Image (cartoon, rainbow, N blue to C red; front, side, top):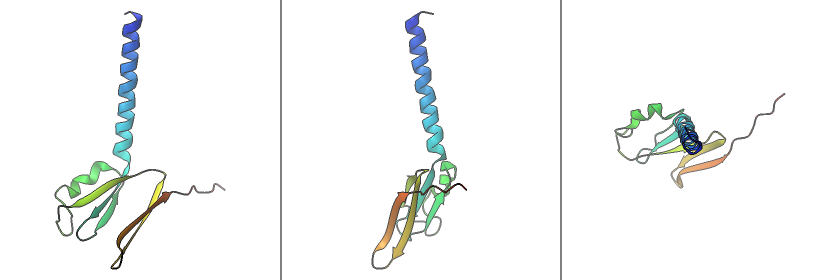
Length: 99
């Protein structure tokens, strides 16, 4: 095996490892889902349960269900009022003090 073939193989291995790490990270990230019709909401710990909303909202069966990832260091609050509708606020999750 010559040097350029080894280099190409190493580069390909690095790309595949990086892709696998990214895929694993994305599979494990939390997902927030919100029905655009009845405002039912849930946070899934990972993507493995998204099949529950494959056909739409589990409450009103509306097909318009929005979803987006929640990062490990991210927190959010949801507030639903008649006046303002649905309001989501995102922020950086505070680290717990170690004692």
